[in-house]
Image (cartoon, rainbow, N blue to C red; front, side, top):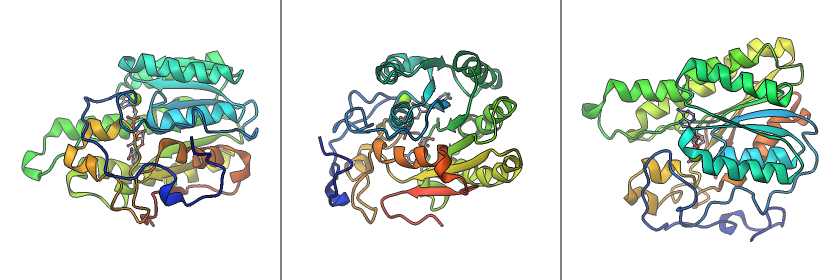
Length: 296
Ligand code: NAD
Ligand code: MG
Protein backbone atom coordinates (compact mmCIF):
# COMPACT_ATOMS: atom_id res chain seq x y z
CA UNK A 1 0.00 0.00 0.00
CA UNK A 2 1.43 3.35 -1.09
CA UNK A 3 1.34 5.93 1.69
CA UNK A 4 -0.70 8.96 0.65
CA UNK A 5 1.54 11.12 2.85
CA UNK A 6 4.93 10.10 1.39
CA UNK A 7 6.32 12.60 -1.12
CA UNK A 8 6.31 10.92 -4.53
CA UNK A 9 5.45 11.35 -8.20
CA UNK A 10 1.62 11.60 -8.27
CA UNK A 11 1.47 10.35 -11.86
CA UNK A 12 2.55 6.88 -10.72
CA UNK A 13 1.04 6.95 -7.21
CA UNK A 14 -2.05 4.97 -8.24
CA UNK A 15 -2.90 2.55 -11.10
CA UNK A 16 -2.65 3.90 -14.65
CA UNK A 17 -4.69 2.69 -17.63
CA UNK A 18 -5.19 0.36 -19.39
CA UNK A 19 -7.85 -1.15 -17.12
CA UNK A 20 -9.34 -4.61 -17.78
CA UNK A 21 -12.78 -4.66 -19.41
CA UNK A 22 -15.59 -4.74 -16.82
CA UNK A 23 -19.25 -3.79 -16.75
CA UNK A 24 -21.82 -3.60 -13.95
CA UNK A 25 -25.45 -2.71 -13.47
CA UNK A 26 -26.06 0.58 -11.61
CA UNK A 27 -25.55 1.33 -8.79
CA UNK A 28 -22.73 -1.24 -8.93
CA UNK A 29 -20.33 -2.55 -6.32
CA UNK A 30 -16.73 -1.75 -5.41
CA UNK A 31 -15.99 -5.43 -4.74
CA UNK A 32 -15.78 -6.65 -8.33
CA UNK A 33 -13.76 -3.67 -9.59
CA UNK A 34 -10.30 -4.47 -10.97
CA UNK A 35 -8.07 -2.87 -9.78
CA UNK A 36 -9.73 -2.46 -6.36
CA UNK A 37 -10.44 1.23 -5.68
CA UNK A 38 -8.75 2.95 -2.72
CA UNK A 39 -11.20 4.73 -0.39
CA UNK A 40 -8.61 5.27 2.32
CA UNK A 41 -9.63 2.20 4.32
CA UNK A 42 -5.96 1.42 5.01
CA UNK A 43 -4.38 4.74 4.04
CA UNK A 44 -6.29 7.80 5.33
CA UNK A 45 -4.93 9.10 8.63
CA UNK A 46 -6.94 11.78 10.45
CA UNK A 47 -5.42 14.69 12.33
CA UNK A 48 -8.47 15.84 14.33
CA UNK A 49 -9.74 18.43 11.87
CA UNK A 50 -13.48 17.76 12.44
CA UNK A 51 -13.73 17.15 16.18
CA UNK A 52 -17.26 16.24 17.30
CA UNK A 53 -18.90 17.24 14.00
CA UNK A 54 -22.11 15.59 12.83
CA UNK A 55 -22.11 14.84 9.10
CA UNK A 56 -24.59 13.46 6.56
CA UNK A 57 -22.96 12.06 3.39
CA UNK A 58 -25.09 10.88 0.44
CA UNK A 59 -23.79 8.12 -1.81
CA UNK A 60 -21.68 7.05 1.15
CA UNK A 61 -21.50 3.30 0.49
CA UNK A 62 -19.01 3.44 -2.38
CA UNK A 63 -16.69 5.66 -4.37
CA UNK A 64 -16.13 9.27 -3.38
CA UNK A 65 -18.81 9.28 -0.66
CA UNK A 66 -17.28 6.20 0.99
CA UNK A 67 -13.85 7.88 1.03
CA UNK A 68 -15.38 11.06 2.48
CA UNK A 69 -17.27 9.15 5.20
CA UNK A 70 -14.13 7.26 6.24
CA UNK A 71 -12.04 10.45 6.28
CA UNK A 72 -14.65 12.39 8.27
CA UNK A 73 -14.76 9.68 10.94
CA UNK A 74 -10.94 9.61 11.14
CA UNK A 75 -11.03 13.42 11.54
CA UNK A 76 -13.35 13.03 14.54
CA UNK A 77 -16.87 13.28 13.07
CA UNK A 78 -19.96 11.11 13.54
CA UNK A 79 -21.42 10.23 10.15
CA UNK A 80 -24.88 9.38 8.78
CA UNK A 81 -24.63 7.32 5.59
CA UNK A 82 -27.21 7.79 2.82
CA UNK A 83 -27.30 5.19 0.01
CA UNK A 84 -29.70 3.11 -2.07
CA UNK A 85 -31.36 0.16 -0.27
CA UNK A 86 -29.60 -2.38 -2.55
CA UNK A 87 -26.24 -1.04 -1.31
CA UNK A 88 -26.88 -2.09 2.32
CA UNK A 89 -23.89 -4.43 2.55
CA UNK A 90 -21.34 -1.84 1.42
CA UNK A 91 -22.91 0.77 3.72
CA UNK A 92 -22.52 -1.61 6.66
CA UNK A 93 -18.82 -1.97 5.83
CA UNK A 94 -18.42 1.81 6.00
CA UNK A 95 -20.36 1.89 9.28
CA UNK A 96 -17.95 -0.69 10.75
CA UNK A 97 -14.95 1.42 9.71
CA UNK A 98 -16.51 4.51 11.35
CA UNK A 99 -17.29 2.61 14.55
CA UNK A 100 -13.71 1.29 14.59
CA UNK A 101 -12.66 4.93 15.07
CA UNK A 102 -14.93 5.17 18.12
CA UNK A 103 -17.36 7.36 16.16
CA UNK A 104 -21.10 6.91 15.59
CA UNK A 105 -22.43 5.71 12.23
CA UNK A 106 -26.11 6.01 11.27
CA UNK A 107 -27.55 4.10 8.30
CA UNK A 108 -30.18 6.01 6.30
CA UNK A 109 -31.02 4.05 3.13
CA UNK A 110 -33.51 5.41 0.59
CA UNK A 111 -33.98 6.64 -2.95
CA UNK A 112 -33.37 10.40 -2.84
CA UNK A 113 -35.48 10.97 -5.98
CA UNK A 114 -38.47 11.18 -3.63
CA UNK A 115 -38.82 14.41 -1.59
CA UNK A 116 -40.23 12.74 1.51
CA UNK A 117 -37.23 10.37 1.59
CA UNK A 118 -34.86 13.36 1.62
CA UNK A 119 -36.82 14.90 4.49
CA UNK A 120 -36.76 11.60 6.39
CA UNK A 121 -33.01 11.08 5.80
CA UNK A 122 -32.23 14.48 7.32
CA UNK A 123 -34.70 13.93 10.19
CA UNK A 124 -33.13 10.57 11.10
CA UNK A 125 -29.64 12.10 10.94
CA UNK A 126 -30.63 14.93 13.29
CA UNK A 127 -32.43 12.56 15.65
CA UNK A 128 -29.66 9.95 15.88
CA UNK A 129 -26.61 12.24 15.78
CA UNK A 130 -28.23 15.00 17.83
CA UNK A 131 -27.88 17.58 15.03
CA UNK A 132 -26.16 18.19 11.70
CA UNK A 133 -23.08 20.35 10.99
CA UNK A 134 -21.94 19.02 7.62
CA UNK A 135 -24.17 18.11 4.65
CA UNK A 136 -22.39 16.43 1.73
CA UNK A 137 -24.70 16.10 -1.29
CA UNK A 138 -22.70 13.63 -3.35
CA UNK A 139 -25.07 10.93 -4.68
CA UNK A 140 -25.51 10.94 -8.42
CA UNK A 141 -26.58 9.02 -11.52
CA UNK A 142 -24.76 9.23 -14.89
CA UNK A 143 -26.61 7.71 -17.85
CA UNK A 144 -24.82 7.98 -21.20
CA UNK A 145 -26.78 8.82 -24.36
CA UNK A 146 -24.73 8.91 -27.56
CA UNK A 147 -27.09 10.88 -29.80
CA UNK A 148 -29.89 13.44 -29.50
CA UNK A 149 -31.90 11.01 -31.64
CA UNK A 150 -31.88 8.63 -28.65
CA UNK A 151 -32.89 11.29 -26.12
CA UNK A 152 -35.73 10.18 -23.86
CA UNK A 153 -37.58 12.41 -21.44
CA UNK A 154 -37.47 9.85 -18.65
CA UNK A 155 -33.64 9.87 -18.72
CA UNK A 156 -33.52 13.60 -18.10
CA UNK A 157 -36.24 13.33 -15.44
CA UNK A 158 -34.17 10.65 -13.70
CA UNK A 159 -30.94 12.67 -13.83
CA UNK A 160 -32.63 15.80 -12.50
CA UNK A 161 -34.45 13.92 -9.74
CA UNK A 162 -31.27 12.12 -8.65
CA UNK A 163 -28.71 14.92 -9.13
CA UNK A 164 -30.53 18.27 -8.79
CA UNK A 165 -33.70 18.02 -6.67
CA UNK A 166 -31.89 16.62 -3.60
CA UNK A 167 -29.77 19.81 -3.49
CA UNK A 168 -32.96 21.72 -2.68
CA UNK A 169 -34.77 19.04 -0.68
CA UNK A 170 -31.87 18.04 1.58
CA UNK A 171 -30.69 21.59 2.17
CA UNK A 172 -34.20 22.85 2.93
CA UNK A 173 -34.71 20.02 5.42
CA UNK A 174 -31.30 20.54 7.03
CA UNK A 175 -31.16 24.33 7.11
CA UNK A 176 -33.17 24.88 10.33
CA UNK A 177 -30.68 22.60 12.08
CA UNK A 178 -27.40 23.88 10.57
CA UNK A 179 -25.55 26.08 13.10
CA UNK A 180 -23.14 28.92 12.22
CA UNK A 181 -19.91 27.21 11.18
CA UNK A 182 -21.78 24.46 9.33
CA UNK A 183 -20.81 23.43 5.80
CA UNK A 184 -22.79 22.22 2.79
CA UNK A 185 -20.65 20.52 0.14
CA UNK A 186 -21.74 19.43 -3.33
CA UNK A 187 -20.17 17.08 -5.86
CA UNK A 188 -20.17 18.60 -9.33
CA UNK A 189 -17.86 17.30 -12.09
CA UNK A 190 -15.44 18.44 -14.74
CA UNK A 191 -18.40 17.47 -16.98
CA UNK A 192 -20.23 20.52 -15.66
CA UNK A 193 -17.55 22.72 -17.26
CA UNK A 194 -16.21 20.70 -20.24
CA UNK A 195 -18.93 18.21 -21.23
CA UNK A 196 -18.36 14.98 -23.16
CA UNK A 197 -20.72 14.52 -26.14
CA UNK A 198 -22.43 11.42 -24.72
CA UNK A 199 -23.07 12.93 -21.29
CA UNK A 200 -25.32 15.90 -22.11
CA UNK A 201 -28.05 15.04 -19.56
CA UNK A 202 -25.51 14.38 -16.81
CA UNK A 203 -23.29 17.34 -17.73
CA UNK A 204 -26.14 19.83 -17.60
CA UNK A 205 -27.01 18.55 -14.12
CA UNK A 206 -23.39 18.93 -13.01
CA UNK A 207 -23.23 22.49 -14.38
CA UNK A 208 -26.42 23.08 -12.41
CA UNK A 209 -24.80 21.78 -9.23
CA UNK A 210 -21.86 24.19 -9.54
CA UNK A 211 -24.28 27.04 -10.24
CA UNK A 212 -26.54 26.09 -7.32
CA UNK A 213 -23.44 26.02 -5.10
CA UNK A 214 -22.74 29.66 -5.94
CA UNK A 215 -26.35 30.75 -5.42
CA UNK A 216 -26.87 28.96 -2.11
CA UNK A 217 -23.48 30.09 -0.85
CA UNK A 218 -24.67 33.68 -1.13
CA UNK A 219 -27.99 32.85 0.57
CA UNK A 220 -26.59 30.92 3.49
CA UNK A 221 -23.38 32.77 4.35
CA UNK A 222 -25.56 35.37 6.10
CA UNK A 223 -26.37 32.62 8.62
CA UNK A 224 -22.71 31.64 8.93
CA UNK A 225 -23.14 28.51 6.78
CA UNK A 226 -20.61 27.98 3.99
CA UNK A 227 -21.60 26.22 0.75
CA UNK A 228 -18.86 24.91 -1.54
CA UNK A 229 -18.33 22.10 -4.02
CA UNK A 230 -15.82 19.68 -5.44
CA UNK A 231 -15.53 18.90 -9.18
CA UNK A 232 -13.90 15.50 -9.66
CA UNK A 233 -12.26 14.37 -12.87
CA UNK A 234 -12.31 10.69 -13.88
CA UNK A 235 -12.39 8.74 -10.60
CA UNK A 236 -12.23 4.96 -10.29
CA UNK A 237 -15.66 4.22 -8.77
CA UNK A 238 -18.60 1.87 -9.61
CA UNK A 239 -20.25 4.75 -11.48
CA UNK A 240 -17.82 4.08 -14.34
CA UNK A 241 -18.30 0.33 -15.06
CA UNK A 242 -22.02 0.91 -14.35
CA UNK A 243 -22.48 3.55 -17.03
CA UNK A 244 -19.43 3.71 -19.34
CA UNK A 245 -18.78 1.15 -22.14
CA UNK A 246 -15.72 -1.11 -22.02
CA UNK A 247 -13.81 0.66 -24.80
CA UNK A 248 -13.74 3.77 -22.60
CA UNK A 249 -13.09 1.87 -19.34
CA UNK A 250 -9.87 0.51 -20.84
CA UNK A 251 -8.51 4.05 -21.37
CA UNK A 252 -10.19 5.58 -18.31
CA UNK A 253 -8.28 8.65 -17.13
CA UNK A 254 -5.70 8.49 -19.92
CA UNK A 255 -6.81 11.82 -21.43
CA UNK A 256 -6.02 13.86 -18.31
CA UNK A 257 -2.70 15.73 -18.06
CA UNK A 258 -1.93 13.30 -15.21
CA UNK A 259 -2.49 10.36 -17.58
CA UNK A 260 -4.34 8.28 -15.02
CA UNK A 261 -7.67 7.98 -13.21
CA UNK A 262 -8.05 9.38 -9.70
CA UNK A 263 -8.84 7.19 -6.71
CA UNK A 264 -11.72 8.02 -4.34
CA UNK A 265 -9.28 8.65 -1.46
CA UNK A 266 -7.69 11.47 -3.47
CA UNK A 267 -10.98 13.40 -3.15
CA UNK A 268 -11.26 13.07 0.63
CA UNK A 269 -8.84 15.88 1.61
CA UNK A 270 -10.81 18.47 -0.43
CA UNK A 271 -14.05 17.46 1.32
CA UNK A 272 -12.32 17.58 4.72
CA UNK A 273 -10.89 21.03 3.97
CA UNK A 274 -14.28 22.43 2.89
CA UNK A 275 -16.01 20.96 5.97
CA UNK A 276 -13.45 22.17 8.48
CA UNK A 277 -13.12 25.62 10.01
CA UNK A 278 -9.75 26.08 8.27
CA UNK A 279 -11.66 26.94 5.04
CA UNK A 280 -13.53 29.73 6.87
CA UNK A 281 -13.10 32.28 4.03
CA UNK A 282 -13.85 29.86 1.16
CA UNK A 283 -17.47 30.37 0.06
CA UNK A 284 -19.25 29.41 -3.17
CA UNK A 285 -16.14 27.78 -4.63
CA UNK A 286 -15.93 24.52 -6.56
CA UNK A 287 -12.52 22.90 -6.17
CA UNK A 288 -11.22 20.88 -9.13
CA UNK A 289 -9.73 17.48 -8.32
CA UNK A 290 -9.26 16.48 -11.93
CA UNK A 291 -5.69 15.35 -12.52
CA UNK A 292 -5.02 18.63 -14.32
CA UNK A 293 -8.15 19.14 -16.46
CA UNK A 294 -9.00 22.85 -16.05
CA UNK A 295 -12.56 23.73 -15.01
CA UNK A 296 -12.51 27.51 -14.62
P1 NAD B 1 -20.59 5.75 -6.81
O1 NAD B 1 -21.43 4.94 -7.70
O2 NAD B 1 -19.69 5.05 -5.89
O3 NAD B 1 -21.48 6.74 -5.94
C1 NAD B 1 -22.70 7.26 -6.38
C2 NAD B 1 -23.70 6.96 -5.28
O4 NAD B 1 -24.88 7.70 -5.53
C3 NAD B 1 -24.15 5.50 -5.22
O5 NAD B 1 -23.29 4.78 -4.38
C4 NAD B 1 -25.54 5.61 -4.64
O6 NAD B 1 -25.51 5.35 -3.27
C5 NAD B 1 -25.89 7.07 -4.83
N1 NAD B 1 -27.14 7.26 -5.56
C6 NAD B 1 -27.33 7.25 -6.90
N2 NAD B 1 -28.62 7.46 -7.17
C7 NAD B 1 -29.25 7.61 -5.98
C8 NAD B 1 -30.59 7.84 -5.59
N3 NAD B 1 -31.56 7.97 -6.50
N4 NAD B 1 -30.88 7.91 -4.27
C9 NAD B 1 -29.90 7.77 -3.34
N5 NAD B 1 -28.62 7.56 -3.65
C10 NAD B 1 -28.32 7.47 -4.95
O7 NAD B 1 -19.77 6.75 -7.75
P2 NAD B 1 -18.95 8.08 -7.44
O8 NAD B 1 -18.15 8.30 -8.67
O9 NAD B 1 -18.30 8.04 -6.13
O10 NAD B 1 -20.09 9.19 -7.45
C11 NAD B 1 -20.22 10.17 -6.45
C12 NAD B 1 -20.46 11.51 -7.09
O11 NAD B 1 -19.30 11.89 -7.80
C13 NAD B 1 -21.61 11.54 -8.10
O12 NAD B 1 -22.37 12.72 -7.91
C14 NAD B 1 -20.88 11.60 -9.42
O13 NAD B 1 -21.66 12.22 -10.41
C15 NAD B 1 -19.68 12.41 -9.04
N6 NAD B 1 -18.57 12.33 -9.98
C16 NAD B 1 -17.96 11.13 -10.21
C17 NAD B 1 -16.90 11.10 -11.12
C18 NAD B 1 -16.18 9.82 -11.44
O14 NAD B 1 -15.41 9.79 -12.39
N7 NAD B 1 -16.40 8.75 -10.72
C19 NAD B 1 -16.47 12.27 -11.76
C20 NAD B 1 -17.12 13.45 -11.48
C21 NAD B 1 -18.16 13.48 -10.58
MG1 MG C 1 -22.69 2.78 -4.42
